[in-house]
Image 1 (cartoon, rainbow, N blue to C red):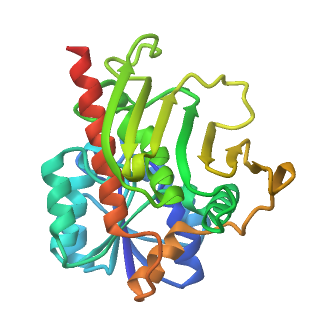
Image 2: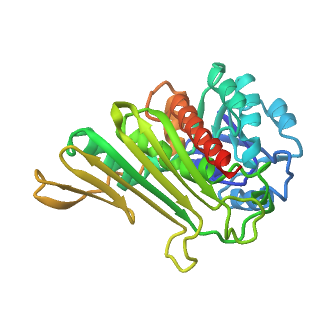
Image 3: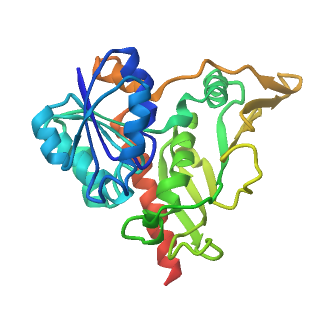
Length: 324
């Protein structure tokens, strides 16, 4: 099996352990339209060299895909190019492992959804987190009864952001970039589907980053009248121990599960009050993708990635319309 990488602006490294473990031929790397330095290709090459990889550097990603004819393309360039490049690869029979969002417009997203020439997996890594997996297991076991409400939070440190975050043409917005994780995990945890959304966002006090929105909130209606909310911000203090703060509260008819600070807890009368759920073994999102390619169906489907992206874009467009 042969793999290549396009861009290094996000989480391509999610695939590196799996590539090494399966002795996959890492044959090429290139940037998207932004260029080698803007997309961090030089730093990626240094990291790959330390892991024992030596991909050939290409100036053009199309030239690389034509020359290498890979089985898999990792797509990790600037957000606005994910969809275009992923779609090109899929239409040429190349499987795609892509960072989120998988597209930033509905037309491209529809085309990705309809393309059946190859498979796609998206980098929704919370599905592999030990605490989130513990919550999922307990919900599937019926330990909180029927899910009725969910509330999620995503908070990141702002830090120093690359130039492309300053413009809506290259930065997709905090909902499709950050809140999308919670949009994905709430559907995955509950097994429900989204049916409607209302959202707001703010660009105030964004550290001088142009028109980058830095805070947002969205309220979703789901099947079976489940209510789901998410907030996302980039105000997490620099002194915090971790870059991100991921939280979810799942309310059921017989109990409540919360994931916070990397731990899952359950409170219910049947449990005798509040208990901490034991972590499940950590997963590997790229290994799950490889399993799909091998015909082993699992949670990481193109359909779920398309749905999470669709509702993130719906929420984003709704929030933008409120800005006037």
